[in-house]
Length: 140
Image 1 (cartoon, one colour):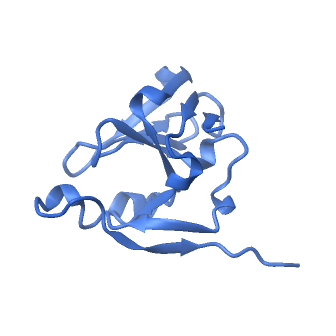
Image 2 (cartoon, rainbow, N blue to C red):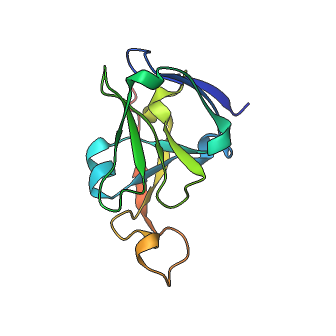
């Protein structure tokens, strides 16, 4: 099942999303904004994202090219999703906002080179992998 319910921390913003590649699409990014935000994002087509509540609570942040649109709850401050710069038909969804999912559920997460974005280099096709983030749970 690739359909999840999600919400911000205070539940003012609630949504339902179908993930086109399930949780296998989990990514981090090295751009200045994503590096500071620190979220694990999973991918969904725009038509597979349904905002159920809280349109009035959402606020948007854009920077640099103003192409990507990052959505946050104006009440609790949690980033819920963003319209991707690399594909305007796709959202990145904050995995931590999905019911039953934690960023610590991912043993390995690919890290995309967002500093050298593919849209900035007409000769490059697709994102470059900058590395892999690993989470190893301590055994007690």
